[in-house]
Image 1 (tube, rainbow, N blue to C red):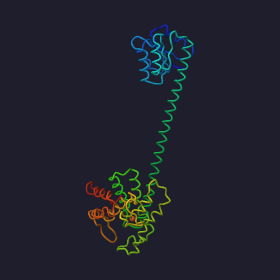
Image 2: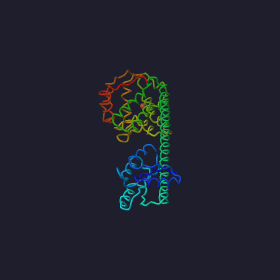
Image 3: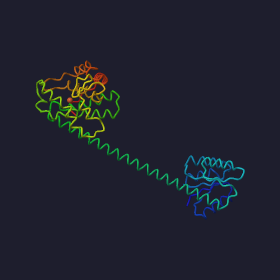
Image 4: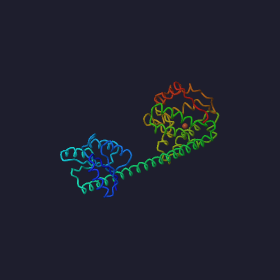
Length: 345
Ligand SMILES: [Fe+2]
């Protein structure tokens, strides 16, 4: 049964309404004016309010506005005398559940209160379900987030393990891929690329030379310049890297970035001699980062050329071998933002 508040300035009406409703099993409280009603509403929860429409102090319609400000779910029944019938229908338009015209019979009152109470139950149930649904969705989103984070960490772990595996055979380039990956990520961010693109470029950077696993170790660490046929063998690492990765369903084009990281915008690169827009932006960035890192690192056949020479190289080949945007971003990072390679991670 419902919790009902009766608001009326006439005592005999309050007594009669209370008796009618209590005989129906409702829990009833009464107030003789709006202020008293507000105090009761602050202290107790009600399902239905039965209020006279015209009272001294504050009109019942104002009480209706107050109630709806507090809680839209309380069902309000307005009681009115014949002259105020327009006000009553106005009250219904403003959100009252119904109105009763005086004189009100007990049966009439009981019927309308039961109907209002049923609506209140439905409102409460809807609210409960919405709350439950919200909690369920929040928990589900948390679970998805937790699982996504765990999978991302596992993926990064696997990619790092692949990177370390190939570098184990070539101590001279240990750390090369991660340094290239970090510079790639910085350049991509400097260029203002989307987070997803930056992430894919970074991950591709970590394993861009994974195809070197198929090159004899002695060739990788050969202390002299390579012969043509040896260089041809080295050049196969882009395709081999692609072949190793092609079965993995990454949410980024990692295989293609790896395949294209030695392509050059004028078509002089390998393995497909792609040019211009046929090369992925991530591969163009990786090409710049790879060149700068390789030139500024020691190699078996030469000492480091230093960062200034490396930057001069990409500046000279800007718009010839290397896309202008990553070249500019890379120079900006080293010259203006004092970017430095970290040797050990
Ligand atoms: Fe490479």
